[in-house]
Image 1: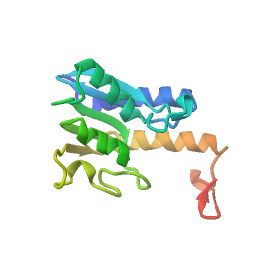
Image 2: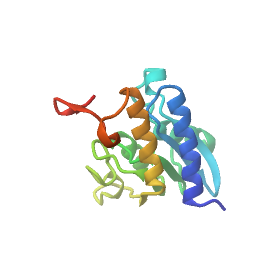
Image 3: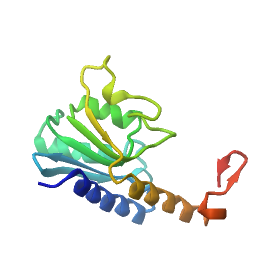
Image 4: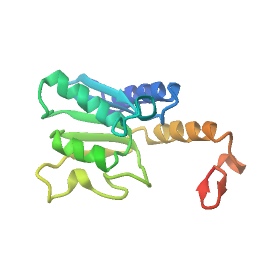
Length: 166
């Protein structure tokens, strides 16, 4: 049986595929009873689809695999903390467990900004495991944006101008 660490490694492989397409490197898997039933990486730029986040791509494939919109008893792995849209989709799909790598201070809707998957007001809640291979996940994102922006400032930190990273 593979561990959270192993499955996150597969997510990192998916994230690398996203980067190869020029997409933000986020990768996701849906696992049921030890088998990968859905996988995905960001495809927003490639498809022009604002909903083509890695989690949504993997979740759609998983739903097709099980033949139903409820993906019961499954675990979704993703390299970056899900946004509001993706967190809501996980609740709606009845995913049992969410395992993610690094936090997203700007858009994270699991713990950073909101707590959608654990909100007691909703009809379903997920178990959440955060921080699996977080350093590797975060470094993949930092490296991607550093390359995209053409380098970095002192000590490898992003260059800031006018209150934003350039």
